[in-house]
Length: 291
Ligand SMILES: [Zn+2]
Image 1 (tube, protein in one colour):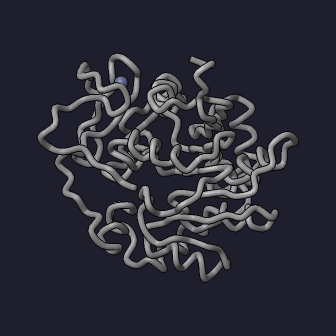
Image 2 (tube, protein in one colour; image 1 turned 30 degrees about the vertical axis):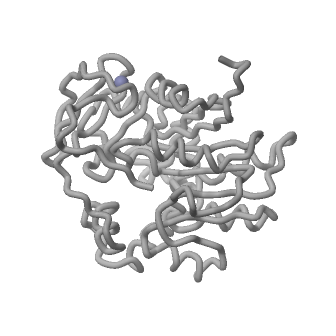
């Protein structure tokens, strides 16, 4: 599901709805704002036309016009599956939770499944996994990896069952209005289920220092940047409880190749000094007793 803000709406924080915003720079012609209340920052994409009526327009939107075909974008996404690269690192952080004692999910829904890497890795360890992907590369991943991917946006009618786990990696930063999507994902969770969300981390040093120049700020496709405070507010608004919050690196640091390091080692060094600019959050349904 991709939801959008209407141009007629007064500009407000997409997490807490506060209208007290401060200028946070600009990028590619889009103005950035930081919420004075919850510290969330975001790009004003209200003027961006709705571009999701077919798969070609969806690809143009999601890649900021950079990819000429679904096949080219699938190959690009697969580069992230190499050891130490972003998709590999994120999926392995999630898989570590699955392999830890005390929680053994039987089925799994991955929303915005991209190259299908996580769906395929879960299938390898015996979990009944399915992805949902509106981009044409989703069906390419299904054929290439032998996995199950539903073509389209997640809706209330996509499945008539719930899952032990629901995930969306690198998806919520693309949502101009993230709350409806997270609430929809929540509807697909079993009572004891877990939700996994990964996104660029707005409290990281690169984000704080570089603001609009931070490499993760690529509007209109990346338009929302969560800090710990703003993500906590979002989870609270959606009646979800944060179980774990990981900060990690997936792109090493400038010059890591010249030093003869592997990307995995460069990431570990960044993690050791807590300089990663990505976040992975594990959530559960909040019981009334937690309130
Ligand atoms: Zn806010």
